[in-house]
Image (cartoon, rainbow, N blue to C red; front, side, top):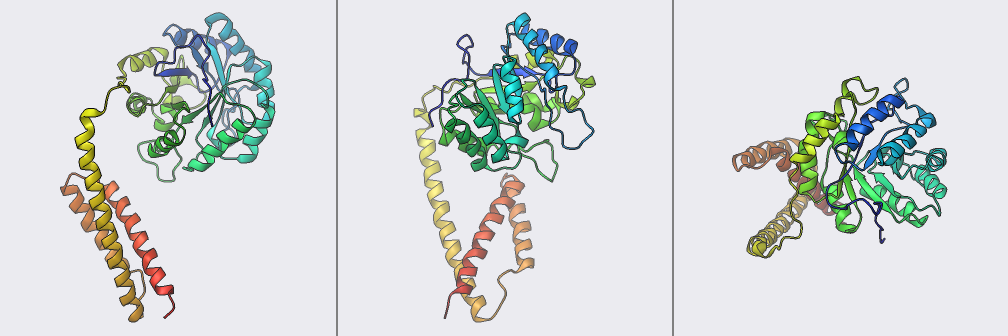
Length: 355
């Protein structure tokens, strides 16, 4: 896929491209006050949720199409371009009729190929930028599939939004960043613009600044940040919204690395990395050979493959050993789990071989 620019010609493509505005358009006064505050900071693209998919019924689900004229007024009085989320073809028609400049597809929609296809069909032949948020679950192929459906409908002004991934185990983040997934998306599609949504990843306003910096360090093209004139009184996602003044403060603190710098001075260090990787692969291959020998022994002595006490002991001991080497214990445990699963797979092959 060859993507075209998602930006209007009068917006500078210099990183970070910023899209900002409230989680939800609540009242015309709130929209205009927020928009004027954001516009005064030099932001060129205003976002606001009109239709809000909520996890449970009873929450504020947006004002609906009646909020679209408010966005027309934002564009007229501030000169900013406008962006809204669409979840079905009716949303698409209403947004296009109101002259919305940019559409985005949310995480709860991108997870559903039927919904994405309906939106793609509704947009067939329309020249409008569309941003696609990652699905709620960590499935890169599903994310790519949503982009491909839109591309096949003739929408080539596409971009991706990384908003993190839902998890049952709640940790510091509302949605886990899992940075390796958007990194792989960038590897496969180098010219696809990728935005980061630190508001939804963090879920807390104090996490927006560090997450924005991480996104810039990973060469993301832009940020989509929720900003509200009075965040504490917001009708949805109050804890992850910031005022236009705080938004401006965060953006001014960002350090933008020079992606055009030569990597010549890194050559020797990269050679060392390559050599170490080769050694690790050789050791892993040796470990798997030993695992297969263990599988042969277990088969000959009619022993079960899984030895739970042994596995628990390995996880505990190796994690402690890794901590003493300044390695992250969660990383060590995840690595060992993957190695153990492959060892079990190798032994199962041995067990299923005919004599």
